[in-house]
Image 1 (cartoon, rainbow, N blue to C red):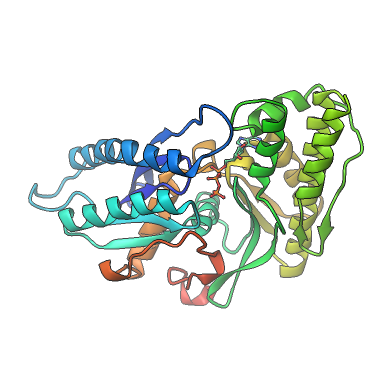
Image 2: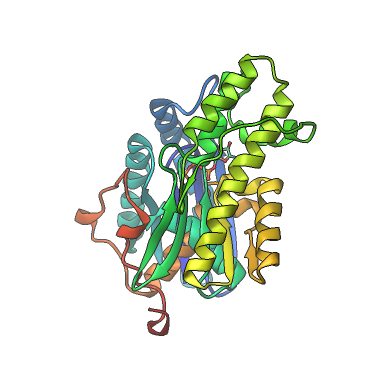
Length: 336
Ligand code: ATP
């Protein structure tokens, strides 16, 4: 099976080719970089409009070059695209591109939930059977685990996503988007100052800690100290809830997904917690962490193999598409 994947929920205009036989994933991404402030939905959708044809064109060319069937056959078996969650104007551009491609190539369309893709790429690259997944991305923060045909949301942020919270703080101090890598760098020279820590069962909240961090900065606390403390508190919160989810489900496998997963301190805390309880921890390689079409193509291949394709007239996008709305069609019967 060979799948062309397209991703475009927010900032990454991305296309990929996944070949299930060789397990090769080739990804082309063109990132939107705001001139100032954070991600602006209209600008981001204009970026999709400009960049998607290029990245898709390059992947399609690669698919044609590596296709060993007759030239009259399509070079891929299906087109998979991110249906949501994400910014509506961006999703609509990507949905239109995917529909057009599936019509021109005369191959089926597969509609992929972006959050489930962040999870499944970790399951795919780890080979874990039934892991708990911590999705630590820009606009989201979820703990997911599979039960009875769905990925259940065991815990999630009660307000902003984890990356977006960090980015709000860095906007306040005047650093360019995205802020996560800059906070990671600055935190290396910091010392701990007190900040709120908010976990309620397996849910958590970032808004109070962000207001307090901005306040500490305005009071003159060195920015390195605020960055260090932010990381320590936010990542401890995520580690605490991940441990609770492992304990609740009885799973001994944890995978990490999402762009904040690039952060070495977060990975260190999760790995240490897993080691202490005899669980295995896996973070996919960096190119699969932030938004990327590779994860869309990989999950698209599993869905396609299960016959989970979309009719054109049902292929609308959904900015609020939750992971637990997705019937999991691609896992073997024994796993259900
Ligand atoms: P979603 O996937 O929820 O729709 P998104 O598209 O914004 O959201 P990703 O591409 O998964 O999310 O992640 C982007 C986020 O990752 C940004 O908020 C960015 O600041 C954060 N990030 C990237 N690198 C790091 C890092 N080293 N440390 C912390 N955060 C990071």
